[in-house]
Image (tube, rainbow, N blue to C red; front, side, top):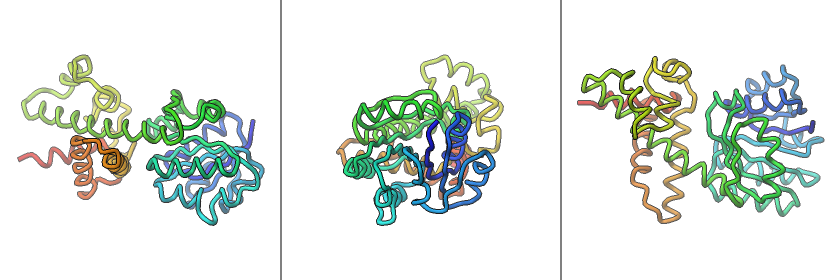
Length: 297
C-alpha cells in the first residue's frame, strides 16, 4: 500500500484517516491540534510537525479542512504545500468550500504538474467512522479514476460530478436541499405534536407517503424513532449546525453569483443563523427542531 499524507484529522478527517490505516496504508498526518493526531498515532500513523514534513516520501495528499480560507493557506500560501512540494503529487481535497477556491487549487496543482480532485463528502461523522461516506468528485477523468481506489476505502458511493469544482457544486446543492428538508421535517413533527398526533405514528406514515425524504427516514430529528440518530443523544453531532450554516452560506453565495433565485435556501440560512446565535452552533443540525418549537406562540 502507498504512503499518504493527511492534513486535517478532526471530527471528519480523523475517522477517514483511521479507515485508510485499517486498509493497510502508511499515513503521515498533520493537524494543529495534538488531540486529533494522538489517536491516529496510537493506530500506527506518523505525526508531522509541519506542513512540509507531511510531504515526506508521499505520492498522495488528502486534506479535510473547515473553511476555504484554510484550504487557500494550506495549498496556495507562501508556506503552503504546493510551494514546498519537491515533486508533482496527487491531491484529494475533501473539504466543503467555495467553488472558486476549489478551482484555484486545481489550477495551482496543474501548474506544478500534479493531479487533483475536489471530493467533498456527505454522511457526517457516523458515515466517516463506518467508511460509508458519499464522495462527490470534481476533476479530470484521469484524476477521478486515480482517486477511486482511495475513496472506496473511506466511502461507499463515489460519484464523478464533472470537471474541476463540480464536486463542490454538487455538495453545495445537496446540502442546501438537506437544510431545507430538515427544517420541513422538523416543522411537520412539531405540527403533528400540536395537533395531537403521536410522533411514531406520523413517522410510520410519513416514511411511506409522498413527504418521505432522507431527513425523515434516515436522520429523524425526534428521539426514540431511529436508535442511531443524534436526537437520541441530546443532539450531540453528527453534523454540527454551524457547519450546516456554513454550507448554506456557500449555497446562497453561489446562487447570487450565478443569478439563481433560492428563496427557500435563503430562509433556511436565516433559520440556521438564528439557531446558531441562540446557542445551537455545536448541536447537531437536526436539533433545530427544539429551537423551532420554542418559537411557537
